[in-house]
Image 1 (tube, helix red, strand yellow):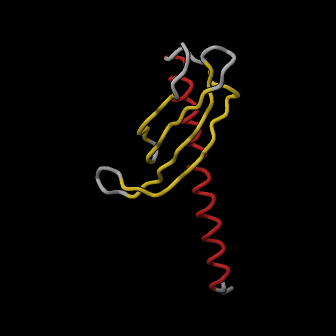
Image 2: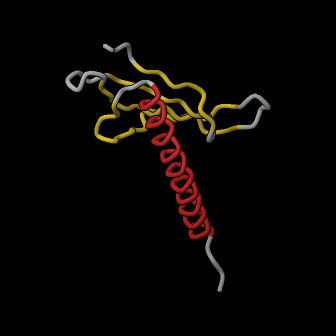
Image 3: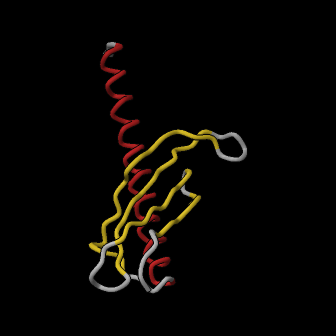
Length: 105
């Protein structure tokens, strides 16, 4: 049975989409764990247990390998009343930066 070029293209696109989804899911799980540990260390509470992917792009790492750059955002509280924002940035599966908005202690 011979496949047409269009069928092979769509099959390849679906496979690549699934691979990206699987990788993104793993990085998000890592992000949630990193954020929870950091919030505990900083004595603040992660709100809603939600971490949201805001942006992604392709960037090169220090050795020149092309990887996915991701920016995840989340909300936390230090007082139980006020909400503050935070951000964690990944390159591949490595944390590049984790920032918490200035907040009350």
